[in-house]
Image (cartoon, rainbow, N blue to C red; front, side, top):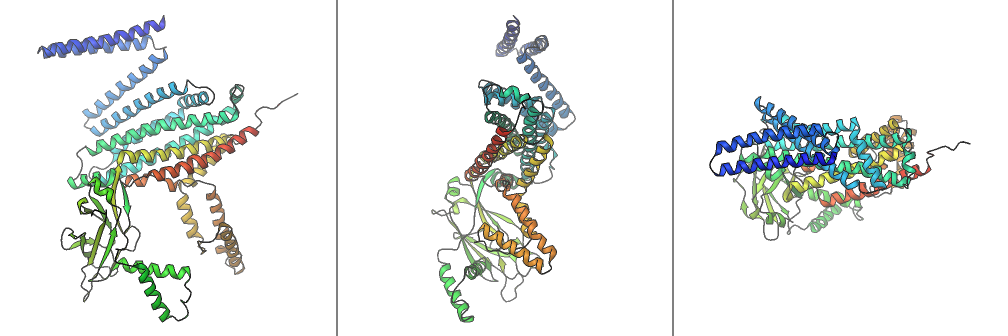
Length: 602
């Protein structure tokens, strides 16, 4: 009877709304605008009162209870947004609306997950219970609320006096970083807390008495955390994409050039191409010519060329090609730009000229010709040792998808002020072109973040099978920090203990070389320098058992408008999703299988 009564109430509510809309539409069609407006107002008020009474009367019904929460949240958000507008804080109203939209998306997604996982048994039922426990956990709710709050509030915290391109990069960087960090901490806490609580409170006994094995138990826990992360990442991704569109159409750009830079260099997926020598420059012939000169200058030393000597000669030739003397010119060929020509978007040529004489006005005077087109003005003024991005029309690309860039140094060779101009430094001369859209790029970046979270979930479950909650959480946090900063730690270890070893050596040979160097420094009395070697060994040993999140960090790529390729996503899937997660899963299953859950007493 209870179900019939509340469904009848809901049916009558729908009838009230439909009748109000129909009558108001008929009145408006007859030209009675005032009567139509009054009918809509009276019908709307009556429907609001009716639904409020129904939500209170049948609040014990779970579906009605959840609908009531949604209605209350919507009313509260509308009132708060209206207050922000009345006080002149439109950005605050947008933030409130964004939080409400993401909250509704989370509620709808949670309902879909419950309906989907609730139909299965075994590991699916454990996953459902895991999600329900997470929703009831106050700490988890705090993390979820913090996630929605940061994504919604970040755009209103940015300085509107800045260029829109800088604000957009800042928002993308901080929002993706916040999403990754918050969900990583939440994943570790949920995974460690769930298994530790089941073992301490002995709830695992009731679970394993059912036809569920220990491996299925861990799989269900992992599946619950992974699905929860998938929902939260989807909601956060929708929020980030929505706020990007709001910022793009907010009209706060400085000028049309600023908006064009955002559209062409930030909200895109671009790849870069390094220059290569033109077809008429034969590096092999230049190498042989230089080698002959060295043999004449140093008889007997270059009769047999070692790999180190060959690399040195080749590096010197490349440096000479990337350097333009006063009054000189060089050609640089960029190929593989056929896709950019098909897109029709302008290509970005990024330069960082370095003047060897360090001119007093810090200006480098160049002339540039691209595929027989004189670029811009006859004299191009660039700042010494600073990046500058130039836009090259797509129709300048030839039918082979190539750009031949000729750069001339206009410094007077008789009275040089600038000296030579070189592009030897990393990323000092490259071309960027579009290969995709921002939406797909953001999606791939979120997939990589999700794969990282999947590994952390399995790591937390594995740690909790044999450690208490505090110890397991701290161990996971240590591994998470090491994985996130693995690239930085590796570079720091190499800089801390400078050891010159051949790159061609095997790992065993490198280990023997390090030990020999340690003993040599120790016998020479260089105690501190000797102790650096074992410190480096310990650090490298730790990093060997930690995945490298730095290799799969999509945040800087998205913020700079560079493509997060499917190749990088696939590598992250194989490394993090299959290898590291699989190894942790096997270890966790073995530990769970050999753990004594109950002691038999006689």
